Image 1 (tube, rainbow, N blue to C red):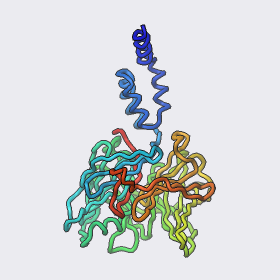
Image 2: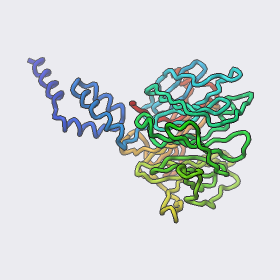
Image 3: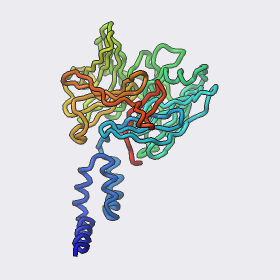
Image 4: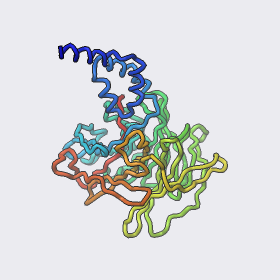
Length: 383
């Protein structure tokens, strides 16, 4: 009798009306919940697969994870900050070696793809660690730039890769913008690529840039003093145009870095990270107001229910309403303790810094890293 009731109960769940299952799926924002939904039974799996493409193109943002590209053992590490769980997995060695050094380094992430830059001609390779997809882009430089220590050289020149869209969804329609430094120029170099191009388009920025982002149909870049530039990739030649000229200077006793972030409400934010002489950490946030002709930065005291995930080459935001385990009005950042990666949380309301975890616990072997091995925030994907 009990078995018959159980069978009927299971059958009832399996054959819930499709519109009810669709409503359930719409409420499941984390990818992990979507995957769990699909393993309940065959019918639920078929509903999940049917909605997969629609889900991929939705505006739901996932909670970033911390990825440690490779250690000397060839293993990568993926860490869920809010869950406190770590996963070990293989990551490929992209590109050749130069003078016994790995001349390709993982230096940025966007839309769930890692960007590897390396070689004498600065070849950019996109790799999706969740699907194994790889996209090899043309060399950035026409003249080789050779250094004795290519690992150190690559780590010191590269800033940011910004993608217009997920190459998994738009393999023939995505664009890329890179901001980098070379040994022969004191200012930032900028180059643009569109799917199908055989070369990069070089853009003369003539200034030091801190970050770049694709925002509402255009590439934007921010200077070290907070000035906002629009990168006009469709003009001939490609140029930059001022959106916001900033006269805001940093005090001489601080070290600063600027980030551009799109909030969960689609606002453009400028975030300044600063260190005082005593290495006290602080963050300030501005929001862009006004149109292109009269836009300006306005400092804000709160980012509401948002949480930002920042590193030197990565900037992301999520709504804590979608992820209750995430701390609202806070900034998650990567710091280093005795040269090992550490995740910290900066509370914008009171300015306090909380250390979330130090990634060198001997019990977590997949997190054991060599000193100075960096980590990156990355968005988990299912394609």
